[in-house]
Image 1 (cartoon, helix red, strand yellow):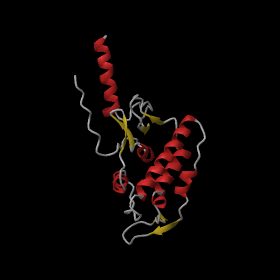
Image 2 (spheres, helix red, strand yellow):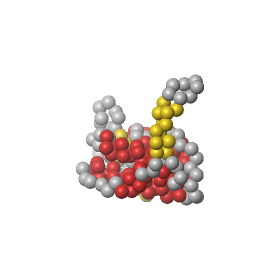
Image 3 (cartoon, helix red, strand yellow):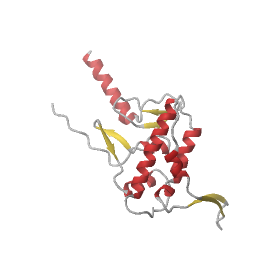
Image 4 (cartoon, helix red, strand yellow):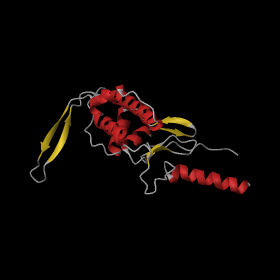
Amino acid sequence: MTTVASPAPLEPFVLADHPVLDLLNTLAVVDGAPYEFWHSDADVQAWLARTGWNLPQARVAKGELLQAALALREAVRELVERRKSGGRGNPEVLNRFLAGPSHLRLDWPADGEPRVETVRAAGTAEQYLAPLAEAAAELLVAGDFNLVRVCEHPDCVLWFYDRTKSHRRRWCSMALCGNRHKVAEFRKRKQA
């Protein structure tokens, strides 16, 4: 019997119920091998737009956004893994992204209510990605790491934040790994 490799997904999975964990899921496992979803600045920009980061187009040299996003993702991955295991992480790289200058500004449009917004410098890729770094820092400080989980499927590396009422979520997605588990269990029962 010949097995046909399933095609790689076209876009990163957005199923973690937390934007920082979706960031980690831009590196996944497809057909048993690591699969990188980001290959260009445009891939990073598309992911930012898809996941609701309302950021303007980055104005940095070609390739800088990609390199900064990969560095941020891997630094955050290490910190989340350390936090999840009860260990201590080194926040040096994350702090580099958080170090950009910013200030608050009151915005009061003629046809709306006043609101406070944060104005950030975006001259470097690190400064541009500062909102994502802030969300990562907030997750590390205030997130309930009893609810931050990795999918239980042995071939999956995707993270999620369990926001279910019972807090018993096991799979990154029932459509992906939950279904694979059900099929495997069915085959075991059928063979027995």
